[in-house]
Image (cartoon, rainbow, N blue to C red):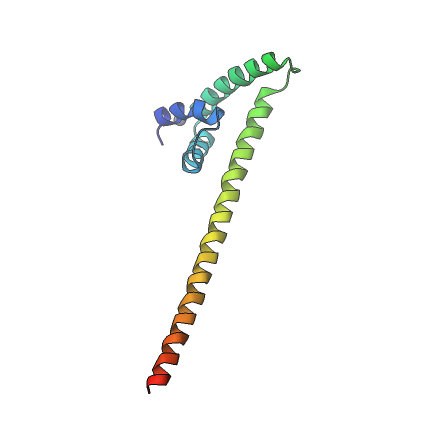
Length: 114
Ligand SMILES: [Zn+2]
């Protein structure tokens, strides 16, 4: 991912509009690119700062909020990836079971014929 692409994902990230794939690419860029991280932090500060003003909430450490948000995003991706692996495995198991049943049916037919 280029810095330009990452910059375009800053607002969608804050608005939670990125797909898992985009989010994953965005997060790994943010981790390796200080410029884009700072860009994200600026937008995040403005956005959450405004939201807090509207809420009348107390002044929180926005840097910590951003770190927390990034961590949650990563856990989400990791969680979904684990779920996908589990899903694929269960599909493979179902296919294998189906294959065994078909082979047994074919053997049954063959023994009837012979
Ligand atoms: Zn960058």
